Length: 288
Image (cartoon, rainbow, N blue to C red; front, side):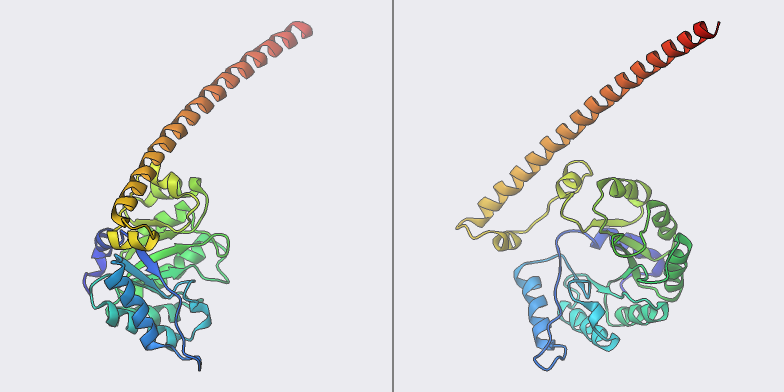
């Protein structure tokens, strides 16, 4: 591995940034993993689009429809194709913790940088159960573990549970798919200094950019993918500049609205207190 187990957090802070991709798994007509097709797709993204990293075998890749042997083969294809040029995260999701360990150990052995693991799909009905699941895996593997939180589908990882999990030596990242900005704010408050946090939902993107300090860092090659104009560098530069300016306006408006809301709430609270005092005085006089 490129780092020791207890160095996973620092390695993740260095590598888990920039633009990453996730790809569907390519199969042949006779339903076999298409080695050449999967290699081609990843190579295109590395050499042409200049991505900073790749996440293989997530939900987009339909890992849940594949055998462990197929998944391991895709790990190998990704690691061989990347050849150290960009970091790779391997989806090692499984209901059975022993199978998770096998997938993680295999990913580590073929040169994958990180393993990402969803909470158990069934049976996890408490924070303690989820913690025990990740602790079991953490104790048996050295590879850096990225937690994956999808509360709409699986048992949620709250900020309190995330803080407990962040203490495990090789837990190094958190992929947040909770669409609630409040949940993400609370999450970053608890673990933001310890783990690399990625917000998977596009809904709060501008909020994260303006208020939470996230940044936009696209290359010219990625810009060309996003636009068909004749001067993509100039166009995309202006586009990012405009987004950044809009984000600053959004941040100002957000603070303004919060200020107005706070003033209104304070005023309302004072009026309520005054009314309450008057009612108490009236009640005392009436009883006397």
